[in-house]
Length: 138
Image (tube, rainbow, N blue to C red; front, side, top):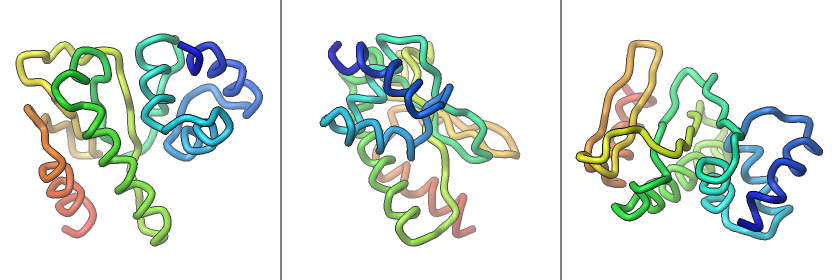
């Protein structure tokens, strides 16, 4: 709750209207919390959207799906995003939502690409890595 209360002010101070993985990293450092907490607060406690303009992006539920491992999946995506950024490789967006209305397949991750959207029901970190490999390495 503390993060959610500070998040809108921090976002305004950065001059942003939506969260990107890069901005989440900055805000998490400024607020002294893990990046997962910033995404969770934004998705569940505020009207702040995640930036959905990246051509390749992973979208996941941080509401009820957290009980099924969505937080672990988000942490995994954040790690892979940071690795790709540090290696100066093409990267992806991350979109956290309160609910994707796919609870029967929790945790679910939607992978958006210019060619369409794929769903990863009961997603695992290994599936995320496989998706990243297919998307970026061919």
